Amino acid sequence: MSEPLPSTARALLRQRDYTRFWIARFSSGLGGQIQSVTIGWQIYTLARVSEHLDVRQSAFLVGMVGLASFTPLFLLALPAGETADRHDRKLIAIACLAAECVVAVGLAAMSGLGVISANLLLGAAVLFGGARAYLSPANSALGPMLVPRELLPRAIAWNSLAGQTATIVGSGLGGVLVGVSPTVAYAVAAGLYLTAGVATLMIRHDTKPTAPLGSRVELIKEGLVYVWENRVVFGAISLDLFAVLLGGATALLPVFARDILHVGSAGFGLLRASTTMGAACMAIFLASHPLRRRAGIIMFAGVAVYGAATVVFGVSRSLWVSVVALAVLGAADMISVYVRQTLVQLMTPNAMRGRVSAVSGLFVSASNDFGEFESGVVARFLGPIGSAIFGGVGALIVTGVWAGLFPALRKADRLE
Image (cartoon, rainbow, N blue to C red):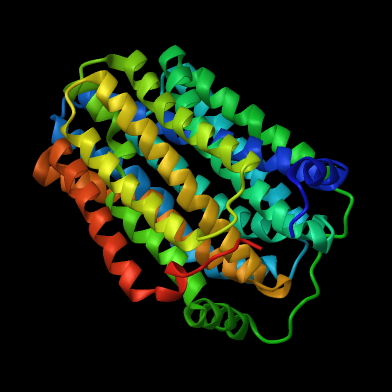
């Protein structure tokens, strides 16, 4: 029988290094999402106002941000995972956070001076993607090193909730800050990266893993084989990949706010915040009422609701209907993320966490960043409304197909 939540939470808080890690993960995720939202809004505004492009062309340019972020991650993810299993994970994380802080400071300075351009924003997205490629597996593998074995399941759950909640909360906060000033938004992101770096630096545990034997190529291959042969792990991360890849309606929020719902930057912030509120409420519920049984079925249900909510958002012409749809979408996404992250971490040995986390991160980033590109491309041909509907229906189809292809994931029961 699992330990009751209150005493477990207190036990985790007594692990000071884990608390520092939690603060770092939350701050880093929050800063990254604020920066991503600001780049998307800024590049769309530049395309519409400065370049005088139409809605479809501008939406395509927004999608290019996702491609720019995903390309370095695609090239570097597997070497980054091997690096996290061979070198000090804390030092890797600090170096990546420092690089992200420099990028954010540069964007704030260029925005403040009025010399920002679409090419500069795309270049910043490439640099950020490169840093995130190494940060993600290092962070994912670092967390479980900081708690006793008996607290590991709960720590993984809370770590997943912290990171994902920060990401989705950052969407809403980014929408609010960009309405004030892109310069302010980038400056806040830089401050959050700095906070994360300081918190990570304060970790006292030995965070250098026992270096595995074998060449870099052999170790990368070992991680890929493990993911492929573990049907629960592979099913969970591939479900997220294809469902979110197709259903990435939030990438088009600047388009919907400006030219479909006609609510401007203030409405854009509200739309972003609605996803935040749905996800945050679900995160709080899951933290106090962790899943006990039928985790696989619940994950599939969450992805299906995510797809249905995306369709509702696509057909809506009312700000408040769109707000509700996005809130439901955020809550459903939090359920699937919670189950996926916990299953992957619990089923992976420590010696392979860097490599497996790298593969998982590659899939997740493909769904988020490359999903933005997919949404932009589809919007170029079907328009933004058609893109959202196409993505939502696609996510529903993927849910049904994956439920049949991965019965082990569907039958996954307890998260322990």
